[in-house]
Image (cartoon, rainbow, N blue to C red; front, side, top):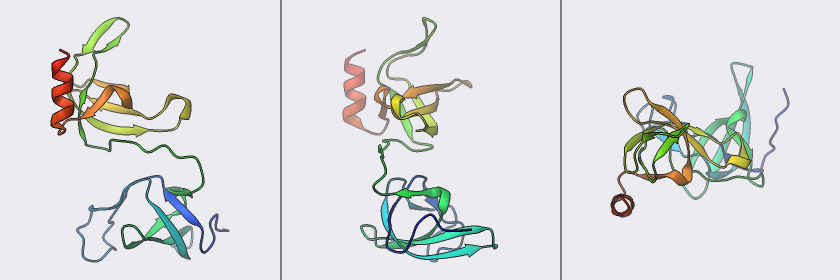
Length: 159
C-alpha cells in the first residue's frame, strides 16, 4: 500500500468532508471542509491497516483534517467548481421537459440530491428532486439557489 501523495503535495478535496466524530469541538455530521478546498499533505498514516489517511492542512480555512486517498486529487489536476451541494434548495431557471412534455415549470422549487461531475464534457449536472417523486438530471446553468432573492426575481420576471 503505497501512498499516491507525498509530504508537501498540494491536494484538492473532491468530496465534502464531514465530522465522523473524531474531530474535536464540532458535532458529528458537521461539514468540516467543502469539496474544492486546497490543502497541503503533511502526514500519511493508516486506518485499520487497509486505508491510507492523509493529514491535510487547509491554510485558507485554518483547519487540519484527515482525508482518505479517494477524497483527494492533486491541486494541479483539472477541476470545475460546482455551485450547489446535496440538500441545497434550488429553483429551475427554465422549464424542463422530457420528450416534449414539460415536467418542471420555470421557477419551480427543487432540492439537490446528488452532484454529478463524472463527465467533464457535459459540465456539472445534478439529480434534483422536484416533488412528487420526480427526480431529473439537470445541468447547473438551469438552476439558481432558492435563497437568492435576485435569482428568484430574475426567474419570476421571465414567467
